[in-house]
Each structure stands twice: as C-alpha cells, then as structure tokens.
Image (tube, rainbow, N blue to C red; front, side, top):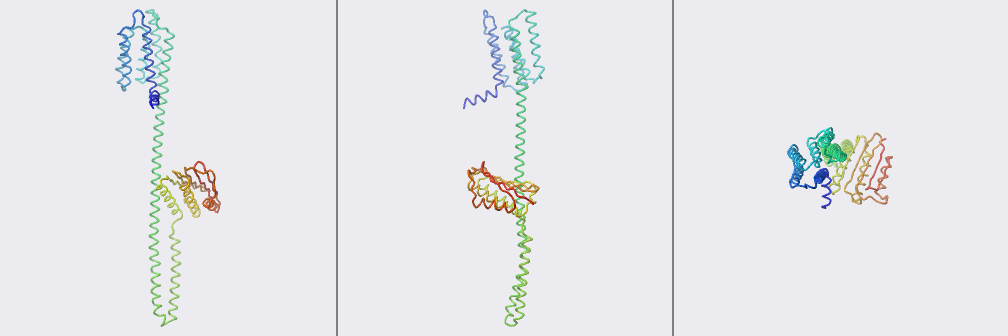
Length: 391
C-alpha cells in the first residue's frame, strides 16, 4: 500500500522532483569546479543550502508570493558566482526558467537563454579569458533544460488542461443525463398518475351511468311486477301483457348496458401502459431495477398488439425474476413506420440451453398469430426480441 501511494505521489509531482534533482546536480557540479587548493568553504555550503531551501519553499507559495523566494535565490546565486566561481552558472539558468514558470511567459522567452549563453561566453573568453566551463557542455545542458521546461509548460500542462476540460465536460454531460433521466422518470410517474386518474374518472362515470340507466329500468320493472302479482288472479290477460312488457323493458335495459360498457371501456393502450408501469414498480419493490421506455408514436399500436406485448412482457419478466438472478430489467417498445419492436432484457446469468416450455411456446404462438417474429438471446443475460408488423 505504501509503495503504491509513493508511486502515485511521484507520478503527480514528477516535475517538482525532477527540478530538485537538477538543482542538486548543478550545485554538486559547482562544488566540483571549485579550486581544490582552496577547497569548499563553509560560506559556499551555507549559500548552497540557502539557495536550495528558498527554491523548495517557493513551491509552498501561491502566485506572486513565489517571487520573493526567487529574487532571494537569485541574489544568493550571484553570491555563489562571486565566492565559488563560474561553476555555479547553471543555477542561474535554473532560476531563469523558474521565473518564466511563475510569469507564465511565452515560448520566445525560453529561447532567450541562448542569448545569455552567448553574452556569458563572450564575457568569459574575450574579457577575462576564463574557459573553466566547456562551451559545448554548457550549450548541451542549456538545451536539455530548454526541452525539459518547454515540454512541461507547453505540452504536459496543455495536455493536463485539456484533460481537466474533458473531465468537466464529461461531468456536465453526466449531470445532464442524470437530469434527463430524472425528468423522464417524473414524466413517466406523471403519465402513470394521469392514467390512474382517468381510469378512476371512467369508473365513476360508468357507475353513475349504470345507476341512472339501470336503476330506473329495474325500479320500473319491479313496480310492474308488483302490479302483475296483484292482477295475476283477477285479470290474467292483463297480467300476461304486463309481464311481457317487463321482459321487453329488461331486454332493452340489457342492450343499453352492453352499449354503455362498449362506450365506457378504457382504451387497451392505457390499460397496457398502466399494467406495464405497475409491473416495473413491483420489480423495483422486489429489489430488481426495472425500466420501461417507449419511443415513437405508441398510438399507432393496435389493441390486439398491445395484448400480445403485455402478455409476453409479463411472461418474460416472470421468468427473469424466477430464474435469472438479475438485478436489472429493461423493457423497450419502439413504434416505427411499419413495425413495432419490443425487447425485454435482463442482466442475469442467462442459460446454456434454451428449452421451449409452455411459457416460451405461448409467446411464440401469440407473436405468430400477428404475423411477427420473436427471438431469444441467452448470453449475456436473457433477452426477448419481438418484431410485429403494423400492417
């Protein structure tokens, strides 16, 4: 666990670690370039320690608060050059690039290090005739530092910025998807509630209509039958006529009841959707996440097709709950121009061999009667796909 944590920290702070290593190497190089006869004084070691400390402390500061540390480190660099010699020259290049990082300078400023190299070589060779630092070595090191800093500032940093932007975009898309999913669920619940309310209203209307029509009819028939009972012994013909009138009245009432029931019967689509939503709700209550999605114009689906979709869906969901050990079920109905596709799928264990029992055979037969096709996929999970023609 500790090694993994260390690798993670190193990966995230690789640029800082690499810069500290470079700074230490330049300090060691400067110490090695000091005249061996004079040796390294305590003053030089103190300046090196202060230089390293200031650069490290700078990393804990933010924004412009870094500048005082860099300025102090630059002054100490001048002291190292004065007391320790030109061997510490690379620490100046290091400070130069650190300033560029803080100022977020353009790429051109990074190339100006070569101008300082030319000036420094002219000063050493032409004026004080000092060749203690090899020009080729110095140029190679400066080029390495240029590539190192530019790679981080203009390649790695840009990549990290894009990654951050992509992450923010993905989070936004995920948030939008969750909002859309929540809105869709609310819309489904609203539609379900409206369907339930409409069915209740239709039931109330049916009850009132039956009471008005059937109640008066039956009451009238009762009154006439009471009169028939009185007249039965006194006037047989009149009683027989009244009895026939009651029969005709009841027959007329039965015809009215049939007409009312046909007129007031709820649409098969509404009943099917209500039952499908209730089926998903029952699955969710049992710990299996079930979702119903409907695409296209569902009003084009005829009643007999709704019956097949409803019966086969109940059969498929029942099998999933019994045998698949699933945690999720998806019911998808797509109404197209000439076809209706219905799929019921779960994320369970599936099966190795499909055996047509009464349930699957019944599903095939119902789909075949409508001229459609049905397929079963057993891995991964179990999926029922029905394709039903609209014409």
